[in-house]
Length: 264
DNA sequence: ATGGTCGACAATCGA
Image (cartoon, rainbow, N blue to C red; front, side):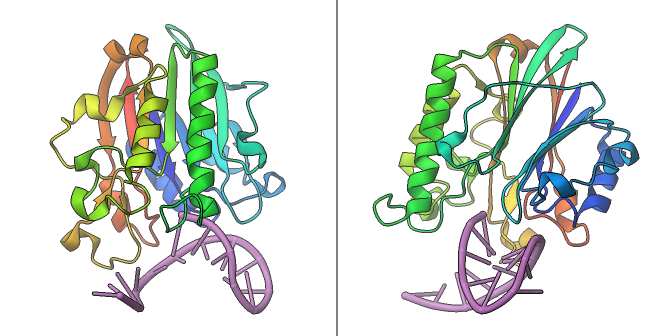
């Protein structure tokens, strides 16, 4: 089973890239973030073109939005929280029937948090911290099993998840308050599946800013996109693919697709 | 210390 996550930064603008991605990597399930499309305008016809006929989506005008395309039928989990009471379309939870049994899949788009790492002067940063705290409480109250959590979590927790630990300690995405909260969230019952394949001392990035024209040369990346699995699925992990080639496609997203393969 | 580039949508806002 191949599960892919990608911050596509506008689903409608990058439908052709999505088709190319699915053709190249043959995922069974694709989780997207920043679809930026209201549900009424969701390009449902893409599902057939991708041969991923089962969809779940939760979008809004201009901002945020998540969607899942799947080869297998999806059942949307009822009663999930409206995170921070904002109705801002940052999460989908579904269940699919893997050969070994049902698996729960979470697709998250965590707030980016703005520029200033001070919750007292930057409401976006306060929102980001509150969002992660609320997610942590949710999984403490609802301990996960046979679960996979993917998405753009907008936090690079480890020293080698950023190009310069020292230079980014004060930059939103790598500040200690964010990292501490993310670790608490992870430890509600998940394992970092990407670091299962890549040791902590190796650099690992999934995002390169649009503001660096020649992203290869500077290589100032960050690991903002994540795949977590519950311990019961760790023995089933088989492979990790960071599809960096997509960062050089025409009109690329600033995030690259991340795919995990499991024997489930 | 600063500005650098995108996407959505129609002047900025968010990333």
